[in-house]
Image 1 (cartoon, protein in one colour):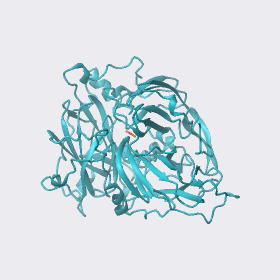
Image 2 (spheres, helix red, strand yellow):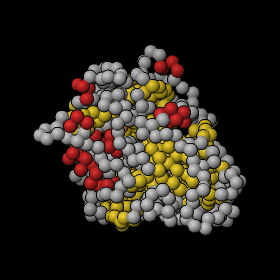
Image 3 (cartoon, rainbow, N blue to C red):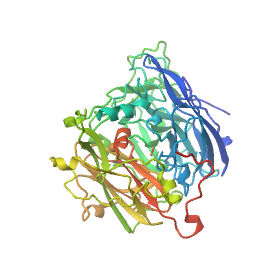
Image 4 (cartoon, helix red, strand yellow):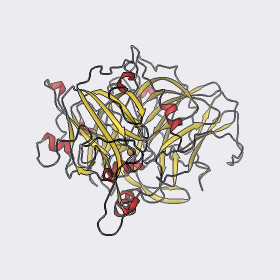
Length: 568
Ligand code: C2O
Ligand code: CU
């Protein structure tokens, strides 16, 4: 019985059947990176794709499986691939961030990645980790329960990927370079997309609008991924309630909601109960943009949920229902949703939050400004944008940090990343002195002992403008034990930590003018980057790197490098 009730107009997804993936199985996949021509918003352009597809192919496996992906770079750009949310135990070599764990795969070359699923289960994704290539080079990863185990919710009738993206009419590969010349903000996008389609509110986009068909009375698992580059989004479906059941590849306690807020990098498993009268209902997403003064794409992307029994004669849908989404800058609406996140904390899905901490880190994250030499830049006050963690703006080296560490090549990075801000200040104060605007530069790593029990407080700042920063850590999942607005208070705030069922995540939104505290055990040796997943902040240097030392026994050491590791 192959009852494919979910149909995709402009279908780009392969629907693999579950029985194609066995337990502990090894899957092989070929990714050919090439330039393909796509038409959106009335104009055609060349974009980078995998296997000619946008969004790219879906990887499917069960927990405990391994996928081996050989990437052939047939494009004119360097490329690398990252498996976002997969811990890649002891295997930084397959993690992907360019100049951090590998040299890029140059045009004409290939490289084989090994992606092993250990504790992850649910929805994750893959994307390019080189320049701004990920705008079009990305796709879903679905990890199903092991054979013989089940979802911690009743089995959905069907699953539907919902990939949120962002589209520029201009060539995205040129955006960071151009922004670097002016020192100002990278150009704003022209559209957001759902499964590669902007939707009916944009010019020339009515007929392509993504449509999912549902049957009244059935439940659907929406696997929502934000592959958006620069904005957090509110997302909802008219008249239909959503139930969050998972995030970043870990299950959550169920949260019923009328909208979600999803940041770049996050993925959410959401149940949709089709219990409304048969009709067409819009799903829609638009920006949650909290930074005062920052420009953002104010457009709205849409797609259609079509109940069977309803019909549409013309692709003009003026009278169908539209979801109520919070106003663009409503931080309260964002935290009203995120504050409910809890892990399952059951026998099948236990939490392992470190109760005793031996390594305390405190990172203040800021958007900064630099003086321009010669003629004024187009950032605020004629300066150029920059960004930092503990006042260090990350500079990528010319060979990767992992190689330099493994082969003991000197002069590539330093081990003295500050474990707390060099000078404390009133991080979230209204008026901050100008001297805080200017960061220092460096390629510095944080060295962690193997198995250290780490608490990291991420403190947002009001330097220049405060914003919600989605901070993503490679190589780990972590528990979000606390959060709040204002400055973190080391005496008071830990008293209200949730050490019972904190959510397990790999991309956490640090609230505007607020903080989050995360905990993890440093049990994955290697080199792991942490950065803001808002692309322009990352481009400006809101990045740092953890170097987790080897343990004593063989099982706690980094794997040897593969033979085909690209060279710079
Ligand atoms: Cu989703 Cu470092 O990335
Ligand atoms: Cu950011």
